[in-house]
Length: 339
View 1 (cartoon, rainbow, N blue to C red):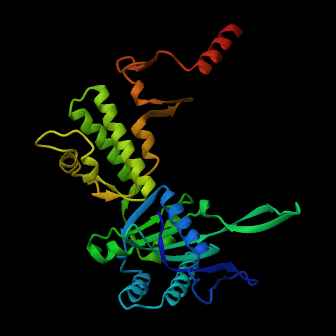
View 2 (view 1 turned 135 degrees about the vertical axis):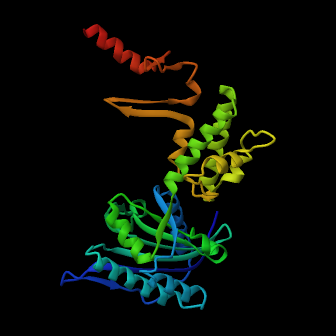
View 3 (view 1 turned 90 degrees about the vertical axis):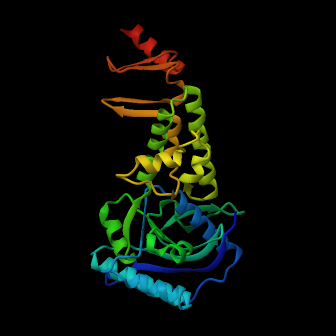
């Protein structure tokens, strides 16, 4: 699937000779070429593939600057390049306020994908690559390291226009470098996290298990239903669309008086499940496998084997496996002989 790129620009945050953080703005937006379209689409897919996102809205009254800049761009038809420079300056100021030195290329991309209008912002560093030319000489060049992108946020401009009051139109990568990274980026955006996407996916998978247990299906029907959920997840991951609980409900068995959607809304009152959220690829494993580790033991096996080749005795807390993997059996037999 292709994206329609409206605006694309890159600025740079770097440390000068005085060891100060400075912004080097580009003079104007890029002309939308095939190369820019490919880069913007790569950025879109890289962002979608990132795990551990948060969702919220631009409702932080203490940090309203970015919301004001975005409003001037969208509602008043402001200049995109000017918006990007002002936003990058705001990011630099926020970094300085948090005493954080974060350098890299600051990317602003406005585009449409699947009839949805997006604004994606990211701080991306480079990685050195080695190429060999026709004369077998080595050439070194720096490439944008999208795979390691950890500072990025995306505003769903369509959702913001239609359902601004729900405060679910901003998503951001939570990162793995501690809360400080998230804090300064959220402060820059003026965003409060309202939804943890990873937790939503975990909750959905748990709800599927609870629902299938409540429906009193036989093991084969349960496995078929889990596979239907896994297939649905794969479809959404491939297309980049959000999981829809109501749509997923149509893939699961239902009684005349209650569907999976009804079950979720009735049972999840303490921690409500959103009607729609981004799919988390890691959740696929929970749909198809049992896994766990602790005390020096790591186990993982297909759910379809449980109750057949693999059984659990809760009374003795014992897991019985019939037909263990040949390579494991060989190791155990060899160890027995050595004893």
